[in-house]
Length: 174
Length: 205
Image (cartoon, rainbow over all chains, first blue to last red; front, side, top):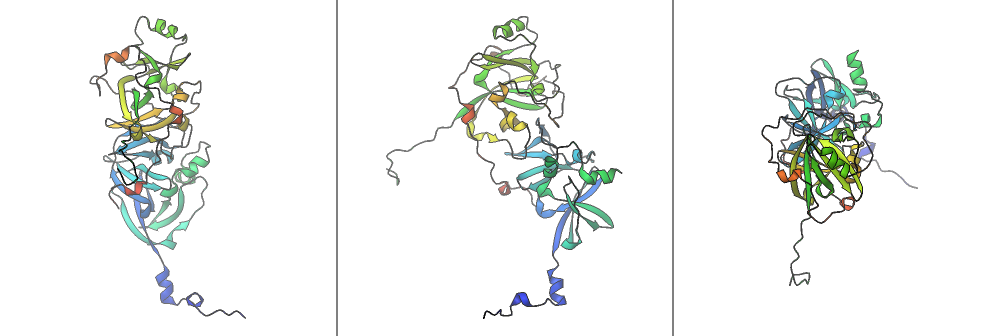
């Protein structure tokens, strides 16, 4: 008769262990067109000063240029255009997003982004159709959308119905 | 003799490609040189005669219009290109001709995978050119009747003033260009995939 030995998995976690299981996640808080938003810092490769881009004729929603940095050539995702806003600031910044199919440049406002460490379960998931937002979280008394940079723009590609900004933009406009 | 038993060293030959570099707005395009038959100034008196010699009777469209966009016909450096293979010819306008450019085919990268729309049939690849990026046009598409029905997000920008050209334009480009190199079959060219970009030495957060 098979028996199961009591192992680590069979133990009930005590209060101290449950507390240790709460994972923290580092978010990068930045703004586009004055709208504050966040993304996982692990999905960000770096931040540069914004530089001139080369327009590319494109049918891909919101990807309409490339940016040359040294010997590297990166596609540019127009997040401001997706949100129907204009980036703000005299010295704009370039956020390098680690999208799952390769790095991608995103123009963001000139405000210096900040890092915030929060517990992972404080990100409340959302399921907005045609949106790159995976959840919201409260940072400094403000509810911010958390963007998935790994999938940025891929939802828009799936629904080529001309709608821009997704549900987040819609709710922000109303 | 090498360890592999070879008696001689094989030096891989670089496949050099020759492109005619043109500009539309702020974007540089590279057109395979051996399909370019003529470069004409639009204001030349016999421009229509040259075009009709190629069997072209309609007014040439702007290259931007091939992408479904509005082209600017105001550039003082505007030129008409006649491209073709065998008996089929197409003419279109560009804002500026920058000259011929040789490049090692290995330095041409495929269009980035993020571009997923119709542009994949327009643009074969890209490479660093001067301080910017040049887009290599698909010759098959260029020499077809296919026109971009919708280019959703290509900003139409006025061409920069060309008081000082970024690169000296050889007057010889204005004349009929003949194929100078062995013709390369563009359709069998394959560019290398994008390398893992995580290795790039950008500043980490």
